[in-house]
Length: 121
Image (cartoon, rainbow, N blue to C red; front, top):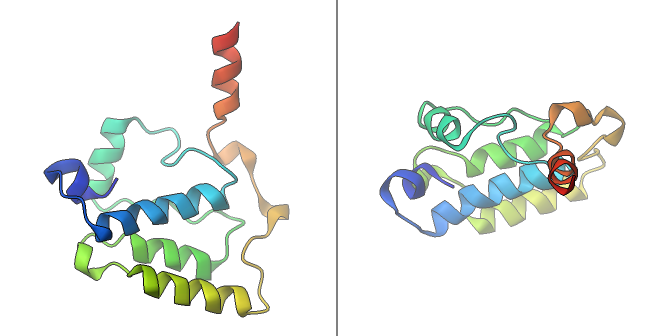
C-alpha cells in the first residue's frame, strides 16, 4: 500500500499506481512476497523513511525504473498508468531482455510454500 493509503486512508489512482509497482515486483520475482523478511510494522517504517525494494538481480534496469516510478513518495510525481503502458511498450519492443532467469536467486525471496507446508503438519 502507498504511504498515503497506509497513514492517511487516502486511496486514489496514484495509490493504485504504487500498488501496481508492487505487483510488477511480485511478477518479476515469480510470485515472491513483497518486502521479504519484513513485518508489516517494519514495512510501514521503512517506506516512510524512503526505503524501496531493491532491484532483483535478474530484472533489467528498465523494468526496475518503471517500478521506482510507481513508488515516488509524492503521489503526483508517480507515473500515470498511461506512462507505464508506454514505458512497458518501449521496453518490450527493445531487443534487450527484461528478465534474465539464469540470475534468479530464489533464496533472496520469501518461500511462502514453506510456511504452507508447515501449517499442514
